[in-house]
Image 1 (spheres, rainbow, N blue to C red):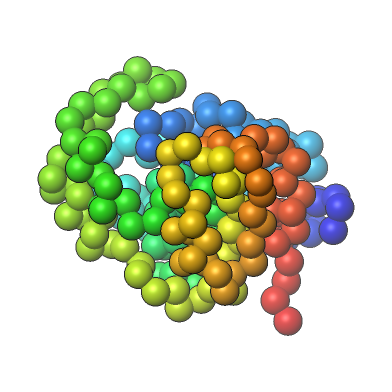
Image 2: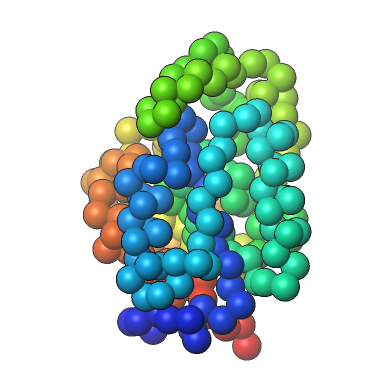
Length: 203
């Protein structure tokens, strides 16, 4: 599938989940939206703004999925958004493409305690001990549906240890590239692979 269109997309509805302190205006999010627009399915993708604590964020994503009860939801998640995508994909048995996803973020979130400014909106986000406990509670330690995931990693990720994701998703479809960074260099080049995976029909 080199070209996508409304026919190949069918009843799929794509939700893109950005990372910590990121935004719907992030480069990868906008590249994904532009890609959908290019093929006439721009009305089939939604990029929510995620800025609340983990428990509230997961609740909001669940409501989004449940509101599309006539659609087959698929997910794209980057960094912490990849963690959230994993949690809800496991809960609802959905397909998800994960870009340098966070794995067990509660184990290193203490270094994020305190106030942080969003890179795009300038809004202040406060990370608390309660948020760490929420991350631990919602974590999906073992995958029930590894076949549902496409993992995209770059070994040059300066923020997260790519080996943790490579281990967790070893039974999933994996694209692991040398070098790169946490933002995932040349993300637009892997969009065809992402959509081929997400839009493929299961036999």
